[in-house]
Image (cartoon, rainbow, N blue to C red; front, side, top):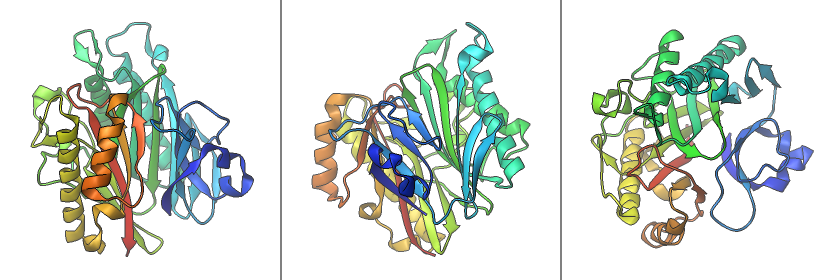
Length: 328
């Protein structure tokens, strides 16, 4: 299995779609497969919409389990779903938490039904993530619903929790994609950061439920999936208003995660230049300076995918997620 970025037009080709477990489509909807979650967040470079694809040798089955559309291949399950908050009341203070709890409940039901119990990586996209409604930020309400769903399903709230991101997008639906496996994964934390599930109450009554990265052994390789990573050290946001300093701090955090992964796996030789990056930028105008910084200071051989989206804390301007693999 590997992550790739393909032109959206490639999704119309049967030979391509037959080898796809699932993916994320950014930009305008263009007739993509049912296994691609359409995210209402535009790409920031010319060339048309693209899809981040999780590819595998063979698709075993696909279908729908409740709200979830899924595909299974060689012990991996990719699923996606979307939930409208309007299902949970016109203006209820709890409706985003309720929608999130229902969405994650559907995910866990799907995993149990299909025998892929280990939730490895989750991508969360929700509208107006930083808005305050009924006196509370929407991201905090999302975190409440997520943790409640983990509790209700008897899932761990610390330790073996999935890698994840949560970004603010357009539209009016909560959208979630996820990767699960039949076999267990290794959660990775970052010594520079407080584990998200141990954040103090000042960030909300319910902590975010995710690990800094997930390491999955599959098909003779170790796949490292690094969560959305920003300029947070300890539990504090740094470098307010300075997107370049925030980018450097995010990269320092990713490199710390790489070092941790190398201590518990054969991935000791994995470096930043070996990773595929998705860079979420709050401000479109920051594309050029951030792109230059990554190219000139880090010499990345593969250009990152740049997406316009809001980051989970209003003071943060950039978030970076990463994927890499090495021989098991």
